[in-house]
Image (cartoon, rainbow, N blue to C red):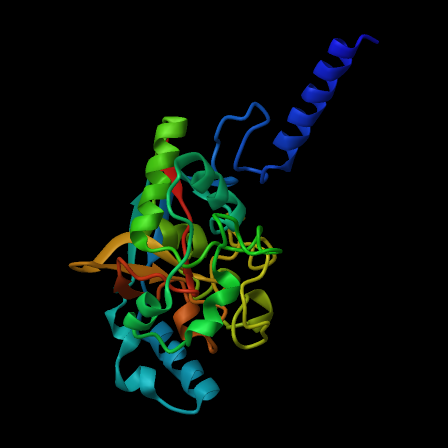
Length: 290
């Protein structure tokens, strides 16, 4: 074999190997961006929100686990939408939260700042975790933390999520967005208004929460295959939605690896966080409509 032919063959093999090394779902074999792995949610009716029975259950399990009634006294779950029947057209939503590997493709292609935060910025957010706690989640030189490629991306603000979906729109021509509370909730809990994706009784074996540990994010895709096949919908990380709680705030949904109980992990539960917040407990997933 001539040297030129051999060199060209080696280059082709190397290029193919590089493509295969890219995160599954983030790039097609042709090298074009496709986005995360998706599930289709069919058109139809579903029950959104909660009623007094569900809220009482959430308060009761919180009190049982934490040994106090702070959530009840502060009426945390009273802001949930009253249960109602609503019909949505079909749409696609990512099977899992967006992973570090998914997000890395965006960072590399766009030059957008990687998930990182200085100590003074972190301290200004007024969260209970000290700065040393977040260091395992911080990216270095635009690269995800070692061994966490298939974990949910965190330390991303609502604006960061918006930047990611805008990039996906340009790359694919599809109408990507962060899911609204309605679309997120149907995908996670299904049509019948269950308290959790698996039923009406909390089961710590079904999610990554503070009830069992490991008190950290885990590789996606291991928990709670909901009625439509969506994974990690509760526990793992809270997820940004496009729904505004008040000016400058967006609802996050689903609970996290730090929560116990888990009243706040119910798909109907909601609370608002500042759009600029970067937290180790918050990530996101994406959707599009045909």
